[in-house]
Image (cartoon, rainbow, N blue to C red; front, side, top):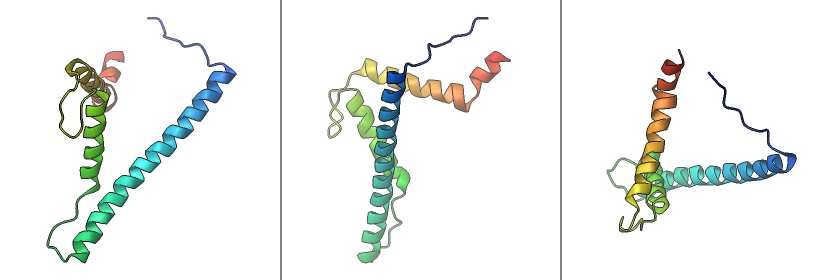
Length: 113
């Protein structure tokens, strides 16, 4: 069995990765805060309007972000869900299946044993 190895990144590549990872972390922090803020906004609006509805859970807004991002990644219009590339969509779904199988179901661990 051979090992897959990667060349260590150069100093410039490490700096680039650090810059990109910091921007990614800030972006994700912003998205997660926006999801939390949206759920709080709905909860406050329901309370202020004295409506007898359960507040919208943060997962609803997380799903909204996921759906819009998926459609945009596939080249579609998130408003109409039209115009996306089905082959690209399948590759994205395949990536999700890979995460499930490799990290959550442990199939990769079972194959190595």
